[in-house]
Length: 353
Image 1 (cartoon, rainbow, N blue to C red):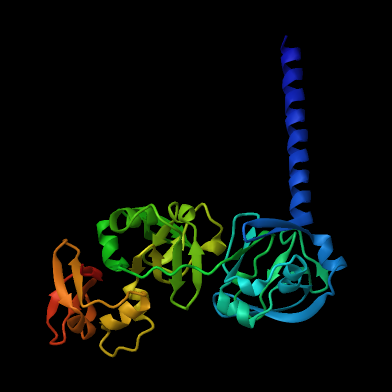
Image 2 (image 1 turned 90 degrees about the vertical axis):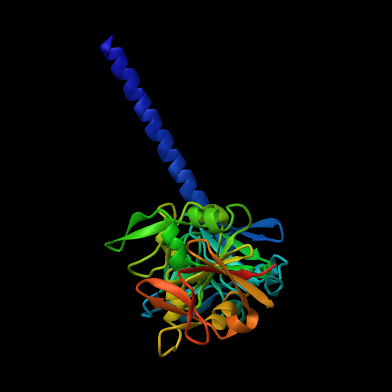
Protein backbone atom coordinates (compact mmCIF):
# COMPACT_ATOMS: atom_id res chain seq x y z
CA UNK A 1 0.00 0.00 0.00
CA UNK A 2 2.80 2.39 0.91
CA UNK A 3 4.57 1.41 -2.31
CA UNK A 4 1.60 2.53 -4.43
CA UNK A 5 1.23 5.77 -2.45
CA UNK A 6 4.92 6.59 -2.88
CA UNK A 7 4.74 5.76 -6.59
CA UNK A 8 1.75 8.09 -7.10
CA UNK A 9 3.48 10.90 -5.20
CA UNK A 10 6.66 10.44 -7.26
CA UNK A 11 4.72 10.51 -10.56
CA UNK A 12 2.88 13.65 -9.43
CA UNK A 13 6.13 15.41 -8.56
CA UNK A 14 7.64 14.51 -11.94
CA UNK A 15 4.56 15.75 -13.81
CA UNK A 16 4.57 19.04 -11.90
CA UNK A 17 8.28 19.49 -12.58
CA UNK A 18 7.85 18.79 -16.29
CA UNK A 19 4.87 21.10 -16.52
CA UNK A 20 6.78 23.83 -14.68
CA UNK A 21 9.77 23.50 -17.01
CA UNK A 22 7.48 23.61 -20.02
CA UNK A 23 5.86 26.84 -18.82
CA UNK A 24 9.20 28.46 -18.03
CA UNK A 25 10.57 27.62 -21.46
CA UNK A 26 7.43 28.86 -23.19
CA UNK A 27 7.42 32.14 -21.25
CA UNK A 28 11.11 32.70 -21.88
CA UNK A 29 10.72 32.03 -25.59
CA UNK A 30 7.72 34.33 -25.98
CA UNK A 31 9.38 37.05 -23.90
CA UNK A 32 12.56 36.94 -25.98
CA UNK A 33 11.01 36.83 -29.43
CA UNK A 34 8.80 39.91 -29.59
CA UNK A 35 7.45 43.05 -27.96
CA UNK A 36 4.28 45.08 -28.37
CA UNK A 37 3.77 48.69 -29.45
CA UNK A 38 0.56 50.19 -28.06
CA UNK A 39 -0.68 53.37 -29.75
CA UNK A 40 -4.06 54.96 -30.33
CA UNK A 41 -5.98 52.04 -28.86
CA UNK A 42 -4.20 49.46 -31.04
CA UNK A 43 -1.44 46.97 -30.26
CA UNK A 44 1.15 45.87 -32.82
CA UNK A 45 3.50 42.95 -32.22
CA UNK A 46 7.07 43.44 -33.41
CA UNK A 47 9.37 40.43 -33.78
CA UNK A 48 12.89 41.12 -32.58
CA UNK A 49 14.28 39.54 -35.78
CA UNK A 50 12.70 42.44 -37.71
CA UNK A 51 15.04 44.93 -36.06
CA UNK A 52 18.17 43.41 -37.59
CA UNK A 53 16.67 42.13 -40.85
CA UNK A 54 14.40 45.00 -41.92
CA UNK A 55 16.25 48.11 -40.73
CA UNK A 56 19.71 49.52 -41.24
CA UNK A 57 21.56 49.16 -37.92
CA UNK A 58 22.72 52.21 -35.97
CA UNK A 59 26.00 51.69 -34.13
CA UNK A 60 26.98 54.44 -31.74
CA UNK A 61 28.82 55.24 -28.51
CA UNK A 62 26.47 56.39 -25.76
CA UNK A 63 26.56 57.55 -22.15
CA UNK A 64 24.11 56.72 -19.39
CA UNK A 65 23.99 58.74 -16.18
CA UNK A 66 23.03 57.16 -12.86
CA UNK A 67 21.21 58.85 -9.98
CA UNK A 68 24.55 59.93 -8.47
CA UNK A 69 25.62 61.66 -11.67
CA UNK A 70 28.22 59.03 -12.60
CA UNK A 71 28.62 58.32 -16.31
CA UNK A 72 28.78 54.90 -17.93
CA UNK A 73 30.02 54.64 -21.52
CA UNK A 74 29.10 51.82 -23.90
CA UNK A 75 28.67 51.03 -27.56
CA UNK A 76 25.20 50.00 -28.73
CA UNK A 77 23.68 48.62 -31.90
CA UNK A 78 20.01 49.04 -32.60
CA UNK A 79 17.27 50.78 -34.53
CA UNK A 80 15.70 54.20 -33.89
CA UNK A 81 12.24 53.82 -32.40
CA UNK A 82 10.96 56.48 -34.78
CA UNK A 83 11.89 54.34 -37.82
CA UNK A 84 10.16 51.26 -36.44
CA UNK A 85 7.03 53.29 -35.73
CA UNK A 86 7.12 54.86 -39.18
CA UNK A 87 7.22 51.40 -40.77
CA UNK A 88 4.02 50.59 -38.84
CA UNK A 89 2.29 53.78 -39.98
CA UNK A 90 2.72 55.56 -36.63
CA UNK A 91 3.95 59.14 -36.28
CA UNK A 92 5.85 59.56 -33.00
CA UNK A 93 5.40 63.35 -33.08
CA UNK A 94 1.65 62.83 -32.69
CA UNK A 95 2.22 61.60 -29.13
CA UNK A 96 3.40 63.34 -26.00
CA UNK A 97 5.51 60.65 -24.36
CA UNK A 98 6.82 57.09 -24.61
CA UNK A 99 6.40 54.57 -21.83
CA UNK A 100 8.44 51.34 -22.02
CA UNK A 101 7.15 48.53 -19.80
CA UNK A 102 9.45 45.71 -18.67
CA UNK A 103 8.47 42.12 -17.98
CA UNK A 104 8.85 42.63 -14.20
CA UNK A 105 6.42 45.57 -14.24
CA UNK A 106 9.02 48.34 -14.32
CA UNK A 107 7.86 51.30 -16.38
CA UNK A 108 9.11 54.82 -16.93
CA UNK A 109 7.57 57.63 -18.92
CA UNK A 110 10.01 59.34 -21.30
CA UNK A 111 8.62 62.88 -21.49
CA UNK A 112 8.15 65.15 -24.47
CA UNK A 113 11.17 67.35 -23.73
CA UNK A 114 13.49 64.32 -23.95
CA UNK A 115 11.79 63.00 -27.09
CA UNK A 116 12.46 66.33 -28.81
CA UNK A 117 16.21 66.30 -28.15
CA UNK A 118 17.14 62.59 -28.04
CA UNK A 119 16.77 59.70 -30.48
CA UNK A 120 15.47 56.62 -28.70
CA UNK A 121 17.16 53.41 -29.81
CA UNK A 122 15.82 49.86 -29.61
CA UNK A 123 19.07 48.04 -28.87
CA UNK A 124 19.79 44.39 -29.58
CA UNK A 125 23.57 44.54 -29.07
CA UNK A 126 25.70 46.10 -26.32
CA UNK A 127 29.47 46.46 -26.87
CA UNK A 128 29.25 44.20 -29.91
CA UNK A 129 27.48 41.33 -28.12
CA UNK A 130 23.79 40.37 -28.23
CA UNK A 131 21.96 41.72 -25.19
CA UNK A 132 21.73 39.18 -22.36
CA UNK A 133 18.61 37.31 -21.32
CA UNK A 134 17.87 39.85 -18.59
CA UNK A 135 17.64 42.56 -21.25
CA UNK A 136 15.74 40.64 -23.94
CA UNK A 137 13.62 41.03 -25.99
CA UNK A 138 14.84 44.59 -26.43
CA UNK A 139 16.52 47.33 -24.43
CA UNK A 140 15.61 51.02 -24.59
CA UNK A 141 18.58 53.36 -25.00
CA UNK A 142 18.21 57.11 -24.47
CA UNK A 143 21.70 58.54 -25.15
CA UNK A 144 23.12 60.98 -22.60
CA UNK A 145 20.10 60.67 -20.32
CA UNK A 146 19.73 59.10 -16.90
CA UNK A 147 19.95 55.32 -16.69
CA UNK A 148 16.41 55.11 -15.30
CA UNK A 149 15.12 55.71 -18.84
CA UNK A 150 17.24 52.84 -20.19
CA UNK A 151 14.63 50.18 -19.59
CA UNK A 152 15.64 46.58 -20.24
CA UNK A 153 13.58 43.43 -20.79
CA UNK A 154 10.99 45.64 -22.51
CA UNK A 155 7.88 43.74 -23.57
CA UNK A 156 5.67 46.72 -24.34
CA UNK A 157 6.14 50.28 -25.57
CA UNK A 158 3.17 52.58 -24.96
CA UNK A 159 2.76 55.85 -26.82
CA UNK A 160 0.84 58.31 -24.66
CA UNK A 161 -1.23 61.32 -25.60
CA UNK A 162 -0.71 64.67 -23.97
CA UNK A 163 -1.50 64.66 -20.26
CA UNK A 164 -4.58 66.68 -19.43
CA UNK A 165 -3.60 69.45 -17.04
CA UNK A 166 -6.04 69.94 -14.18
CA UNK A 167 -5.72 73.26 -12.41
CA UNK A 168 -4.72 72.85 -8.78
CA UNK A 169 -7.44 73.86 -6.35
CA UNK A 170 -5.69 72.86 -3.14
CA UNK A 171 -2.09 72.46 -1.93
CA UNK A 172 -1.41 70.01 0.91
CA UNK A 173 1.97 70.28 2.63
CA UNK A 174 3.42 66.84 3.20
CA UNK A 175 5.58 67.62 6.22
CA UNK A 176 2.55 68.75 8.24
CA UNK A 177 0.19 66.14 6.77
CA UNK A 178 2.47 63.34 8.01
CA UNK A 179 1.70 64.34 11.59
CA UNK A 180 -1.92 63.24 11.24
CA UNK A 181 -1.11 59.84 9.74
CA UNK A 182 -0.05 56.44 11.07
CA UNK A 183 3.64 55.70 10.47
CA UNK A 184 5.27 52.43 9.59
CA UNK A 185 8.98 51.56 9.54
CA UNK A 186 10.52 50.73 6.15
CA UNK A 187 14.01 49.49 5.31
CA UNK A 188 15.74 51.20 2.38
CA UNK A 189 19.48 51.01 1.67
CA UNK A 190 20.28 49.83 5.20
CA UNK A 191 18.28 52.67 6.73
CA UNK A 192 15.16 51.90 8.78
CA UNK A 193 12.94 54.99 8.53
CA UNK A 194 9.28 55.97 9.03
CA UNK A 195 6.90 55.98 6.08
CA UNK A 196 3.22 56.74 5.48
CA UNK A 197 0.81 55.03 3.10
CA UNK A 198 -0.21 57.02 0.04
CA UNK A 199 -3.70 55.53 0.42
CA UNK A 200 -3.89 57.19 3.87
CA UNK A 201 -2.76 60.53 2.44
CA UNK A 202 -5.38 60.39 -0.31
CA UNK A 203 -8.14 59.20 2.02
CA UNK A 204 -7.56 62.02 4.51
CA UNK A 205 -6.70 64.91 2.21
CA UNK A 206 -7.96 63.94 -1.21
CA UNK A 207 -9.71 60.93 -2.68
CA UNK A 208 -8.79 57.33 -3.49
CA UNK A 209 -10.94 57.58 -6.61
CA UNK A 210 -9.91 59.59 -9.66
CA UNK A 211 -7.01 59.32 -12.05
CA UNK A 212 -3.29 58.54 -12.01
CA UNK A 213 -0.75 60.47 -9.94
CA UNK A 214 1.77 62.82 -11.49
CA UNK A 215 5.10 63.15 -9.65
CA UNK A 216 7.84 65.78 -9.97
CA UNK A 217 11.11 65.22 -8.11
CA UNK A 218 13.48 67.86 -6.77
CA UNK A 219 15.85 67.44 -9.73
CA UNK A 220 13.05 67.90 -12.27
CA UNK A 221 12.23 64.27 -13.04
CA UNK A 222 8.58 63.89 -14.06
CA UNK A 223 6.76 60.61 -13.70
CA UNK A 224 3.18 59.41 -14.01
CA UNK A 225 2.16 56.54 -11.75
CA UNK A 226 -1.02 54.49 -11.95
CA UNK A 227 -3.49 54.88 -9.15
CA UNK A 228 -3.38 51.11 -8.56
CA UNK A 229 0.40 51.19 -7.96
CA UNK A 230 0.15 54.31 -5.83
CA UNK A 231 -2.47 52.85 -3.51
CA UNK A 232 -0.13 49.99 -2.51
CA UNK A 233 2.88 52.29 -2.12
CA UNK A 234 4.34 54.48 0.62
CA UNK A 235 6.29 57.68 1.05
CA UNK A 236 9.36 57.40 3.26
CA UNK A 237 9.35 60.67 5.18
CA UNK A 238 12.92 60.84 6.47
CA UNK A 239 16.36 59.41 5.77
CA UNK A 240 18.05 58.87 2.40
CA UNK A 241 16.32 60.35 -0.67
CA UNK A 242 13.20 61.39 1.27
CA UNK A 243 10.47 62.09 0.49
CA UNK A 244 10.78 58.76 -1.32
CA UNK A 245 8.02 56.94 -3.22
CA UNK A 246 8.51 53.19 -2.77
CA UNK A 247 6.70 49.90 -2.50
CA UNK A 248 7.53 46.27 -1.75
CA UNK A 249 5.38 45.39 -4.79
CA UNK A 250 7.37 47.51 -7.26
CA UNK A 251 10.89 47.15 -8.72
CA UNK A 252 13.43 49.45 -7.07
CA UNK A 253 13.90 51.32 -10.33
CA UNK A 254 10.35 52.61 -10.04
CA UNK A 255 11.00 54.35 -6.73
CA UNK A 256 10.93 58.16 -6.93
CA UNK A 257 13.54 60.01 -4.90
CA UNK A 258 13.24 63.45 -3.30
CA UNK A 259 9.66 64.17 -4.32
CA UNK A 260 8.87 67.85 -4.80
CA UNK A 261 5.20 67.46 -5.67
CA UNK A 262 2.71 64.83 -6.63
CA UNK A 263 -0.67 65.68 -8.01
CA UNK A 264 -3.90 63.70 -7.86
CA UNK A 265 -6.78 65.32 -9.73
CA UNK A 266 -6.90 68.96 -8.50
CA UNK A 267 -4.96 68.39 -5.26
CA UNK A 268 -1.20 68.95 -5.20
CA UNK A 269 0.83 67.40 -2.38
CA UNK A 270 3.91 69.54 -1.82
CA UNK A 271 7.18 68.92 0.00
CA UNK A 272 8.38 72.09 1.68
CA UNK A 273 11.58 70.27 2.62
CA UNK A 274 12.46 69.50 -1.02
CA UNK A 275 11.49 72.98 -2.16
CA UNK A 276 13.65 74.52 0.54
CA UNK A 277 16.71 72.73 -0.87
CA UNK A 278 16.47 74.57 -4.21
CA UNK A 279 15.66 78.05 -2.94
CA UNK A 280 18.22 80.74 -2.23
CA UNK A 281 16.54 82.29 0.78
CA UNK A 282 19.05 83.73 3.26
CA UNK A 283 16.78 83.26 6.27
CA UNK A 284 15.51 79.78 5.33
CA UNK A 285 11.94 80.96 4.74
CA UNK A 286 9.94 80.10 1.61
CA UNK A 287 8.04 82.60 -0.50
CA UNK A 288 4.40 81.48 -0.69
CA UNK A 289 3.95 82.99 -4.14
CA UNK A 290 6.81 80.81 -5.46
CA UNK A 291 5.24 77.76 -3.84
CA UNK A 292 1.94 78.44 -5.59
CA UNK A 293 3.67 78.85 -8.97
CA UNK A 294 5.20 75.38 -8.58
CA UNK A 295 1.79 73.74 -8.16
CA UNK A 296 -0.15 75.00 -11.23
CA UNK A 297 -2.68 76.68 -8.97
CA UNK A 298 -4.64 79.37 -10.79
CA UNK A 299 -5.10 82.91 -9.57
CA UNK A 300 -7.73 83.77 -7.00
CA UNK A 301 -8.70 86.92 -5.10
CA UNK A 302 -8.76 85.08 -1.80
CA UNK A 303 -7.47 81.87 -0.25
CA UNK A 304 -8.21 79.71 2.75
CA UNK A 305 -5.26 78.55 4.83
CA UNK A 306 -5.76 75.58 7.17
CA UNK A 307 -3.74 74.58 10.22
CA UNK A 308 -3.03 71.08 11.53
CA UNK A 309 -5.70 71.52 14.22
CA UNK A 310 -8.33 72.26 11.56
CA UNK A 311 -8.63 75.99 12.15
CA UNK A 312 -9.05 78.06 8.98
CA UNK A 313 -7.81 81.55 8.13
CA UNK A 314 -8.96 83.68 5.18
CA UNK A 315 -6.08 85.43 3.40
CA UNK A 316 -6.31 87.79 0.43
CA UNK A 317 -4.20 87.24 -2.68
CA UNK A 318 -2.22 90.41 -1.90
CA UNK A 319 -1.49 89.27 1.64
CA UNK A 320 -0.45 85.80 0.49
CA UNK A 321 1.78 87.22 -2.23
CA UNK A 322 4.08 88.81 0.36
CA UNK A 323 3.81 86.05 2.98
CA UNK A 324 6.42 83.41 3.77
CA UNK A 325 6.50 79.94 5.25
CA UNK A 326 9.13 79.43 7.92
CA UNK A 327 10.35 76.36 9.77
CA UNK A 328 11.00 76.39 13.51
CA UNK A 329 11.36 73.33 15.76
CA UNK A 330 9.85 71.07 13.10
CA UNK A 331 6.78 73.28 12.60
CA UNK A 332 6.03 75.14 9.37
CA UNK A 333 4.15 78.41 9.94
CA UNK A 334 2.76 81.15 7.72
CA UNK A 335 4.40 84.52 8.39
CA UNK A 336 2.92 87.77 7.06
CA UNK A 337 4.85 90.74 5.62
CA UNK A 338 5.30 92.22 9.11
CA UNK A 339 6.95 89.03 10.37
CA UNK A 340 3.92 88.05 12.44
CA UNK A 341 2.93 84.39 12.58
CA UNK A 342 -0.62 84.05 11.23
CA UNK A 343 -1.01 80.28 10.85
CA UNK A 344 0.89 77.73 12.93
CA UNK A 345 1.46 74.20 11.57
CA UNK A 346 0.20 75.14 8.10
CA UNK A 347 -1.23 72.10 6.34
CA UNK A 348 -2.99 73.46 3.25
CA UNK A 349 -3.79 76.41 1.03
CA UNK A 350 -6.82 76.42 -1.23
CA UNK A 351 -8.83 78.83 -3.27
CA UNK A 352 -11.66 80.44 -1.36
CA UNK A 353 -15.06 79.72 -2.86
